[in-house]
Amino acid sequence: MKAYLVRVSDKIDPFGQPAADCLARNKKLREVQRETLLKAGLDPELVERKELIADEQEHLIVSDDIYFTEELLKEFVSRSRILGVNAFCALKLGLVSTRSVVSVQGVEIDKNCAQYHLCYVAESEKRHYKEICVAIDPKFFELNIPVPRQIFGSEQYVVPITSQFIIKIGHWANLWAANVSTPLVDAARIRKKKWKIFLAALRARSFKEHKIMASLNSIGRGCDIHSDTTIEGCSIGNNVVIGAGSRVLTSVIGNNVWIGKNVVVEDSIVGNECFITRGNVMYTVLFPEASVSCEALTTSIVGSGSLLAVNATLTDFRFDGRNILLLKEGKLVDSGNKILGGCLGHNVKIGSGCVIAPGRMIPNRTHVVLKKDRIVRSCVDSHILGFRVFRN
Image (cartoon, rainbow, N blue to C red; front, top):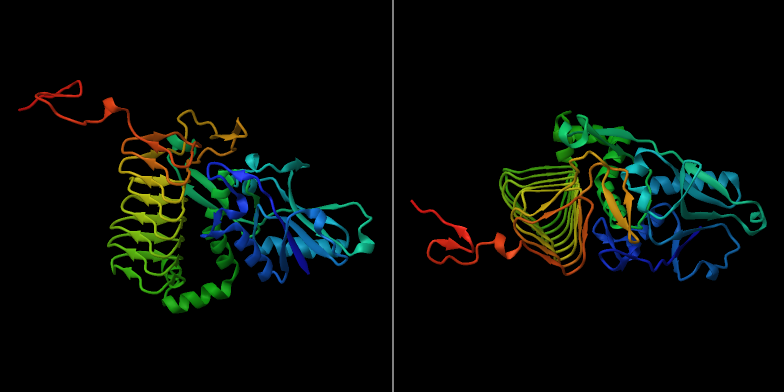
């Protein structure tokens, strides 16, 4: 069966690129879509407009700005074929849609469902029937993340782990959600395959979870990984360097990445040729050639060639306990989430000591530094730019 990918030209801020050209799992979204369609036994073809499709046989039509998993696609196609008429895919609103920031996806919400441009077109003689909604209620298990009460108001933050996932990339926050879902989706697939866990346990000679996850690593060629490191459930590319004492957990690491000593990378996507010299990187997306030297970076995106200096901070929660607000088409929109970091465009530099509020995006090629009166630039006699210096 054919699957027609319809081009969408809308650009995603701050990157200035159509969603299909943005990275998901270290590949362009368009490539990820094609791979997923092929795995599901479908034949993908790119078209400029929906009106150009002239196919009398059953087929799919999907916008090229949508990220979806193989499991969701198969369920949608199977249920649509049973109905035997034209159908469109919808996702029931709930924790999965909330965490994917459905409020800025630009999809229609109707009857507690988010509707997507993923459509099944039946054979020509059956197309006169009204198009039917196929609503998928994703099955998931809860990952409970301990969070201080001062941040979230409760002791845990719940992340849904599911392999049935669909999201329209209408905002950088959706691109972030699509990326960080990758290791979580992989974890959901492993949990569903009990035989795979059993085989992994045999290889690890243990039924302890951390040892099983370590046996599931995929590590590329030419890597220099110190013996005093912990790597669990990761896909690691070629020529990666990881220093002593570092922990890399359920993450995707690209080629030629350099990770320093005592660094933690968890549930994140790290692009090719990135540098992580220190700190903790969690639930974060680093595009190629990004460099991070800050102490902590969570639930954020760092664009290609961008840099976060020592003591630069992208905050991810509000002191008043309210949801994070996002800018969408010039208006502030409630993200529905109390924890969400920021987004740096391509070739952005954030200097030491700078703090970025949660949910903010920094445009491409922007440099952010402290005001001159906050930085020591010269020392003359006993004064440093207006500050009295006392010497013993």
